[in-house]
Length: 71
Image (cartoon, rainbow, N blue to C red; front, side):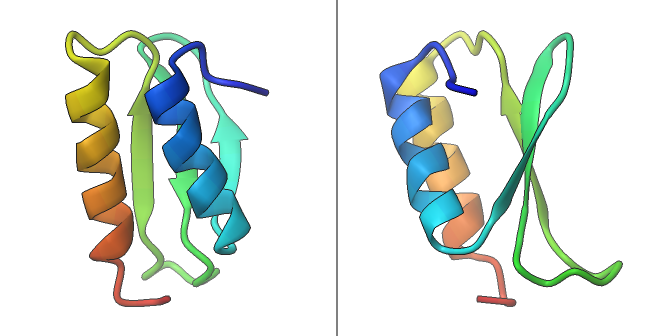
């Protein structure tokens, strides 16, 4: 499963290589990234399907992933 935007897909690839798990959704939320912490305290990052500014959304996703305390 690939996101239609290359900037967002690059962030998804980085996250999955770091142990995050991608779950495909439907509608406005294209998918969710779950951090390696598999308990209820784990982080969830939601990926929008068609954000107004894809590059800014990719930066925000990357920032959220980097802020995860479970890595």
